[in-house]
Amino acid sequence: MQELTLSSLSNITGVIALIAWAACLIVDLRRGITRIVTGRTAVFVSVLIWYLLEVVQTPAELNIYTQSEYDLGVFYLSMSMAAFIIAYHWSRYSLFASFARKLLVLAQPRVLWMLVLIGMTVGLGSLLIYSGWDVQEPFRGLIGPRPRWTALGRGRFGNWSSLIYELQVFLMATVPLAIALVFMRQAAILPRIISGIFVAWMFLRVFWSGTRTPMILIVVSISAALFWNVSPRWRVRSAIIGIPFILIGGYFWSATVVSGRNAGAFDTSQATEVNYVGFEMFRELLFILRATNDGMPIQWGMTYYTQLVNPIPRALWPDKPVADAGLLMAQAYGAVDGNGDATMTVSPGFVGEAYLNFGLLGLMLVPAVAGVCVRSWDDMFPIVTRSLPTFIVYAGGIAIILMSGRSFNASAFYPLMCLYFLIVVITSLPNATPTRAPPDVISRASREAPYTKSIR
Image 1 (tube, rainbow, N blue to C red):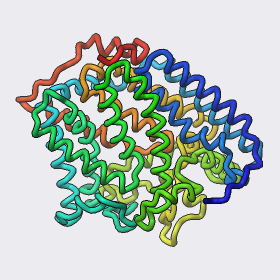
Image 2: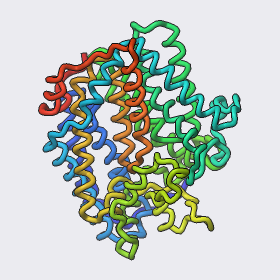
Image 3: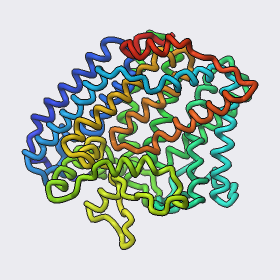
C-alpha cells in the first residue's frame, strides 16, 4: 500500500464549495427523479468527480502549492460554476431542434436496424482496411489489455490512411442504437441478437483498452435502457444504488487501467498504488495558474481551434495546427521527446483549459457557452422521451457532457455527428418514412424549463 502523506493545506474553502455544489444538486434532484438524466445534473456530477473530490481530499501532491494558490483555485472554480448556472437558466436558444426532429425516426425498428447495419459496416470496414485486412484484429484485446504501444492506432500527425482509421467512430455512433434495438420488444429477434453481440464486442474492446469516454458512453446508454424499462417506483432505488456504484467502479477501473496500461496488465490490487488516476483536474488548474503566472502564454482560443479543425486531413492541410491542450501541458511539464511529441498524457481540465485560453475572461465565457449548449440539449427532453431509442441517444449526449468536465475534446462529439449523418442519409431514402415532431413541440421545448415530463 502506498504510504500516505498528509497535506499541509487547509481545505476549508474546498469544503464550503463542495457543500454549496452538493446542495444545488440535491435541491435539483428533489424536484423530480427524471432530473438525473439531464445535462445539468451531469455537469454537477462532473464538477464533483473531476475537481471537488481532489479539492476536499487535498492529497500530498498539492503541497507544492501555497494556501493562497489553493484558495484562488477554489474561487476560480466556483466562479466558473456560477457562470455556467447563470447562462444555463437564462438561455433561450434552441440549438438542437433539427436534431431532435430527426431523432424521432429511431422509433421505427426497421429504420433503427438499417442504421445499425450501416454503422457496423462502415466502422468494421474501416478497421479491416486500416489493419491491412487483418481479420484477427477485431478479436484482439477482447480477453485482456494489450501493452499501450502495441495496440492498433495512429500517430499524432495523420495522413490519408488516418482518415480511414477515424471512420471507426461509426462503431461508437452505432452503440446507442444497438443497445436500443436489444431492448426494443417490437423488433425482430435476429436484429436484437446481432445487436447484442455487437454491444458485447464493443464493451470488451473498450473495457480492456482503458479509454474513458467510450466506456462511459456505453455504460450510460445501457443504464438509460434499464432506467427506461423499470417501473417508476424502482427508478429512484435504481438511481440511488446504480449511480454511486458506477462512479466508484469507474474510479477504480480507471486506477487499475492507469497502473498497468503501459505493460498491458490489469491487476485490481494495484489500483490503490497509483497517485494519479486522471480524475485530478484541480491540480492541473493550479499548475496552469502558476505556469501562466510564470510566463506561459495565454492561447486565445488556439487549443479549441485546434480541436475544431482536427477532422480536416493533414494531407489537405499540411500546416494544420498541432498544439492542442494535451501537447501544451506536456511541454509545460517538460514531458516531450526530441521530436516534440508528448511522452505523457495530461488533460488540463475544462476550467483549466478555459483559463489557459482566455485568462479570467475564459472562466466566465467558456462555462457560459457550455451552459447555453447544455440547456439546449436538456430542452430536448420532452421530445426524446417519446421512445426508447431517442432517450438512449439523449443519454449518450449526457455521458459526453459528463466526460467533458475532464477536458474539452471535440472527438468525443464525433459519434453524435456521425449519428446525425446516418439519420440524414437514411431519411433521404425513398422507403424511409420518418416520424416528425409537430413544430409547436420544438418551439415549446425552448421556452419551457427542461425535463418537465416524466418518462412513460
